[in-house]
Length: 156
Image (cartoon, rainbow, N blue to C red; front, side, top):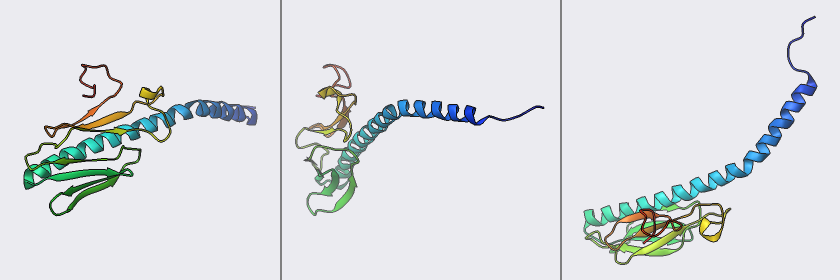
């Protein structure tokens, strides 16, 4: 008599192998998710700085980007009009930058974007963290604190 399908033993062995493989992949997957969160927040912060510069040029007024307790707020300096506000999913260093009506940053400032779960490579950990810099000319750039000096990715 011809039988089709799996026996209970075959099914249990397959499930056990699948569970072992899943447990091996889980730590790498959580690191991957953390890395994507750091990258996405860094890019969003850079885009916010670029948006603030565009608004400063358009309005011919100073625009302030303030980061406090992972809340990023973009406002017009003269009348405190709120242009944009969002909450970062990963830690970002607190600070404030102002872009004048000519689109120039009042000071060069660097914001570090890190992870809640993993240590950055700069501190011996597995995760690539990023810095977002607002240069005095008004340009916002994403840089890697681990990059060698002189490379395009290096922080100034």
